[in-house]
Length: 303
Image (cartoon, rainbow, N blue to C red):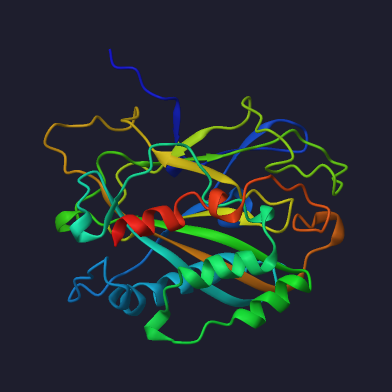
């Protein structure tokens, strides 16, 4: 028989490690598990050209901002002051550089290690690759810098969706998610956060997940960074070979997808004991250009 990667169906739930060290099943949500599946109703009279930033900014990003804001505004998170989108990317197995398409990412990765860089470096990265909603010209650079410098919480969310021909479902090269769970430490201290890069993922509790056969109105949101160290946010990801939930057919259409990232800034201050972006945070030797693994490299391929 055919061997499959051991992958769990995220539609059935997420196995999260509790404070007692035991796994329990819960519904995926962006702040609770680091990822969730959302739905967007599109205007069927509009056929979006996903390589056209103006069309994406007009017909998609306002709806996407709404669902991200709704997802992250619950509980005691505080109000969201900024949602800035950047680095839009069309990916496909049938790469066509003339159509501004980049290859799918087959290697496991996190988009960027934001903790490695100073505030100006983060804001420069977002502003340089920014995509505006409804052609808004101004980027709130100074406001974002001031908020992060003042200790306000910020998070980075990746939004991924299939853009198959004729709105068919994604039937191959699904996006796989690895929400890494780390060694539990109930006495959380700034020098030993339960997150990357301080600790290594615990393979006994970390599992791969996939949403099989995503439809054109489904959007997968997953975190790449969160300033609050007690929230799951470093979601490793890549395209997957066929899993036990689907068999790759010879006549299946090649995968085409669109992803864009969002820098989300809140108006609440992160407590010192949970501040992952504190001054004494661990930092790798890599530069911003080296750590930002896909931004500049793939953007150059599209030109």
